[in-house]
Amino acid sequence: MLPTSFRRLDLNLLRVFDAVMAERSLTRAAHTLSLTQPAVSNALRRLRETLGDDLVRRSGASMQPTPRAQALWPVVQEALAQLEAALAPADFVPQQAGNTFVLAMADATAAALMPRMVNLLAAEAPGVSVRVLPLTTRDPRTLLEDEDADLAIGYFPAVLADLTARRQAGKPADHAHLRVYDSQYVCLMRHGHPLASAPLTLDAYCAARHLLVSFSGRPYGFTDEALAALGRERRIVMTVNQFFTAGRVVACSDLLTVLPLHFFGVTGLENELVWRPMPMPMPTVHVDALWHLRHAGSAAQRWLRGLVARSAGTDNGAHEDPAAVRPAP
Image 1 (tube, helix red, strand yellow):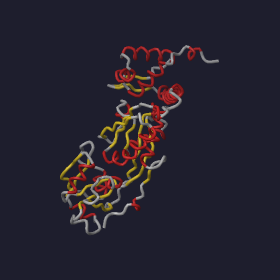
Image 2 (spheres, rainbow, N blue to C red):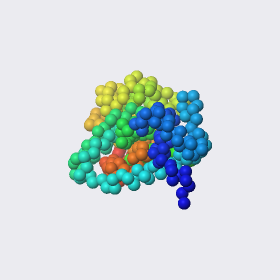
Image 3 (cartoon, rainbow, N blue to C red):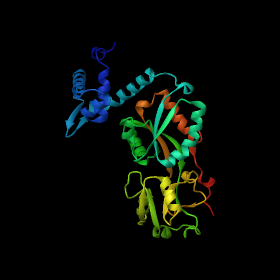
Image 4 (tube, rainbow, N blue to C red):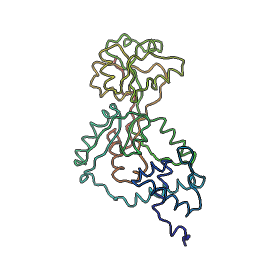
């Protein structure tokens, strides 16, 4: 027999608890739930009375959970996700669907995925629309939490490391990811560039003038972090926020830039550009699709994630083999 307190529990209170835990703010929780702040405060009070615990206490500008709340939250999250999945439409029929999906990604990623995706949509889901937003950050979790995008697709090493650390520590992680494909960074330069006729050395690379691609506008990137680890640096004379722009600028100048290898084949500038391996170790570019767990049980969202994977080349993600794409002589 269920305890009397549970039989009388209003399950809507658990949705409020989940939102307060996620937002650490009654105001933001109210916005998330489309409720007034007094309604959220009242629901939290009722749940506190039922469970005999404060659950959250104000600390400065935020709400800090009690040990009971920290232990309870993962259970509540899982239960709500399972309930959402059970109540969601069991089937998503692509041929009959009229959904509009929003994907956030950089121009290089879109150039690699969208040509095949448009053909898959025409054949399988002619009524479905896809809208691409520019990706301006390496941490798109706020974009997903605010439901401004269904998926964010890109290279998110810090986000994935944080999700792994949270799970290993037994803390709730609100997002999940799927590996779409792997690539690597290469150095791009114009045909006839003085450095194109010989292997690219670290000294020659550092002495050159560089163009940086930065989505957020910050004046350094992964390349500069790799150089700093070696006690070296480069001179960046121009920063842009798109890979396509970078390719165009490099094609008509002596600047060098660093791009993912998979982008080289979709620039439309193969006759004007050459690429060389980087002269120092660089991290592999793991391109992942990231989504909020509130969509974990949605049949439409599962179909969308499968569409992205197939657009990359295979259902399990396309893993590019650098040896299969040789630099120009």
